[in-house]
Structure formats: structure tokens, C-alpha cells
Image (tube, rainbow over all chains, first blue to last red; front, side, top):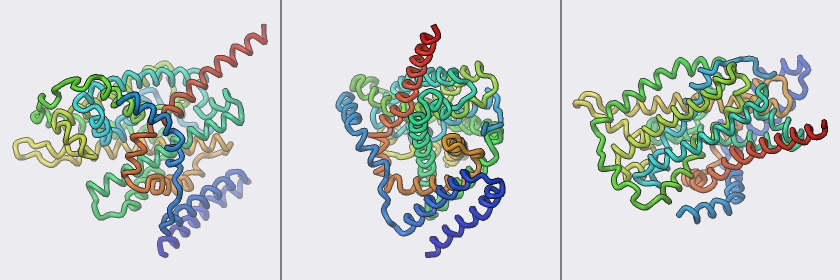
Length: 77
Length: 368
């Protein structure tokens, strides 16, 4: 529980220091990208703290390249 | 222009050397010797020659549009939509690379040095230091590398000098025991580890001052870094033997433990850890820098520094969930890592060059 509170607080502190200067200079694009990435990052951290398994993209890449890697294995062994 | 700093070609040389050594020095010998046995050093020489061909390709690409980095070149040649997609693939590659470096650091510390510390604490501390460096910009990173570089050289020199008494030439024999195939397999698996990753420097080349000297230094840096790795591999085989090198996860760390000069200088394995931490830190920092810069250019932002804190969260979480355990990681490196990096680090740049040639021919024939 404390870990989740700590993560959310860290996110809040970062946005407290980073967002006001952006809004002041009217950099809306930067503000949107920043908040989106931060929300995704904090959500992922909370999922990891709660021990929820996130499907890893590395498995998909392994599947995508498996024909080629087995072909290389058959050539080289 | 997002980055205003400029670096000299000498700084570039040092960055290339550090980038080549970093990450590979600790884990490469084990992976290579597993496939090629006592001929691992031959396999590594072959890999270096192939790697130099890649550097030739990257130099061609860098001289195509000298004032643009890889992301901008992609958009210029492929057009807006396809260019953004291929740029995104490249950024994913760097993103995975930085999180893999971070998890390597975490794994090394929790298994060898700080046994009871949670892995997240080490990763967060390392990433924060790295973030601090990236926030200060490219020039500062290069100057810091310049300060630490002599230390790396001195420590490497101490390591190799003190290991000379422990060399056993018999460990290299018999040469070519099982023919060429294991050697080729070893070099196939090791080209992706330091050499294809050098494509990252296409993000930095526009900010280097002397372009002609830079191209030469790109080759020189690769050869020097490769030479250091070659020494590490051949010393692992000569001192530890094939069986030990295969079995250990960090053979070069064990090399440091073997040092014993007159019962006086002993257990100096931490110097290997120092070399590794320095080089890995700079590798992580410039990867992180390139990731933030590339993402800012891809999305059309005015400043890349704003992305650093969110990216720190993303790199940290990806380092934890991309590989649930070390077996998964080693399987990935053994099967998929090489074709994956070949696709992004060789196939896409080749495609870029070809498309650019065709475009230039077409526009020339239109003018006639």
C-alpha cells in the first residue's frame, strides 16, 4: 500500500514542478505528451507493485522472428 | 534544432569506445564461449570484421544528410507517415536497449555485490544519476566521459597486467576442433551485442564538429573497443578455461577474483566492476538521451527535457516486466535478439539508402 502511495506522490511532485511552466508558455502539445506518458508510467508501476503480470512485448517479437531464428539454427548447427 | 551542444570528433571517439565496451565486457565472453568453445576469439574477430561493414553502412547514412539525425533522415527519405513508423521502431529498439542495460545492472548488483538490497532500489538510484546527466545535455555527458576515460584505461591495464602470470596456453588448444560451424554460430550471436547497437550513434553524428575526422574515428573507436573486448574474451579462455567461462554468468568478474600477486594484491574483482559500471553508466545515459531526443523530434516537441521524468518511469517498469526472469532474458538473447537487431539496425538503414538512391535518380530524370 505504501509503495503505491509513494509512486503516486512521486508522480504528483514531478507534475507539480514540470506542468506550470509549460502551461504558462502555452506549450499544450508538450503538456499533453508529458501527462500521457507520466500516467502510463505510474499505472504500469502500480500494476507491478500489485503483482499483476503484464504481457511482455518481447514474447510477441520472439513469435514474429521464430521462423528466421529456427532457420538460422538449422543452418549453423 | 533541439540540441544546441556541439562535440568534437575526439569526444565522439571516446563515446564510441565506451559504448562498445559497456554492457558487453561482463556478459559477452560467456555467451560467445558457449557457442564457439576455445575458438571464441576467432569468432570474435569475424564478428568485428562484419561489424566494420555495418560501420561503413552507418557512415554512408550519416554523410547523406549531415545536419540531420536518424529520426529526421527517416522522415525525409520515407515521407511523413512511413518515416514516423520506422522512427518509432528504432526508438523502441533504443527503449528496449536502455531497459535491458538497467536490468543487467540490477541483476549484477543483486547477485554479486549487494545481495540483500531490493533490485528496484539499485535501478532507481542508477536511473536517477543517469537522468541527472541527460538533463545537463550532450556536451556535459561527453566531458564527463572524458574525465572517466583515463580511469577505465588504467583499470583495464591493471587487470590484464596482473593476469599475465595465470595464463595457460593449453586452454586454447585444440584449435578448430569441430570445424567452422561453431565459430560462425558464435559470431552470428555476437554481432548484435556490441556492433549493431552502434547504429545509435546516428542520433549523435549531426552534433559532431569535424565530419571527415568523425568518420575515421567511428572506425577507430569500434576497432579499439573491439580490441578491449577481444582481450577480455581471450583472457577469459586463457585463464579460466572453456568450462568455467561457459558456466559463469560474469566470467570477467571472476577474472578479477583470480588475480593474486605475491599474496599481497588479492580479490581486486571490484576493478572489473568499476570498469563495467563506468561504461554501462555512459551507455545508459546516452541511450536515454537519444530516446528522449528522438521522441521529442518524432512528436514535434520544443524541448526533450520535459520527457525525462515520464521516460524514467517507463524505462524502470519496462526493465522489470519485459523479462519476468533471467531464463526468459537469456532465451530471448539466444534466439530473437540477433534477428531483431538485424532488422532494425541493418535492414532498415539499407532500405533507407536504396530508397534515397531511387528518389534522387527519379528527380534527376524528371529534370531532364
